[in-house]
Length: 131
Image 1 (spheres, helix red, strand yellow):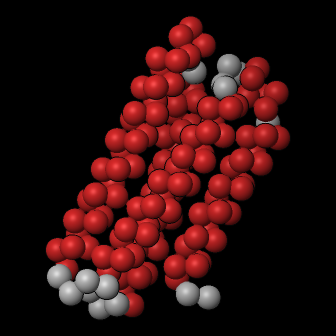
Image 2 (image 1 turned 180 degrees about the vertical axis):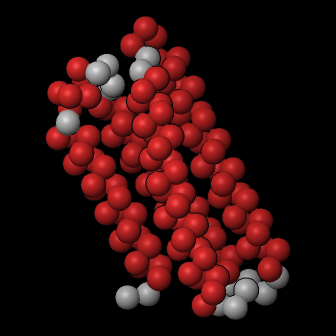
């Protein structure tokens, strides 16, 4: 299996595991005041953003100028960071008194999990293409 398919498979597994976990522990999370729907939406958002950033970075690996790859890495990070920050701000504004800080911290944890998966995939791809 090539690295691109392997990475997409890993992302889908991460998404599925956390989604199943959030659905299975819905009553426990509600008891702690954590909004389950926000976690599911955040997990889906991170999956989509990670796939988009990976596609952008994978295309940049084939470019003859190595600076294009570096720019794509930085752009992918900025897109994920800003999109995540905007999502948290929108959640804060729409939730009113029902804002769950714990849900935001869990979302941040998910962000790091997806980031680790993306960085490890890029390191493997970068070794293979002699960039």
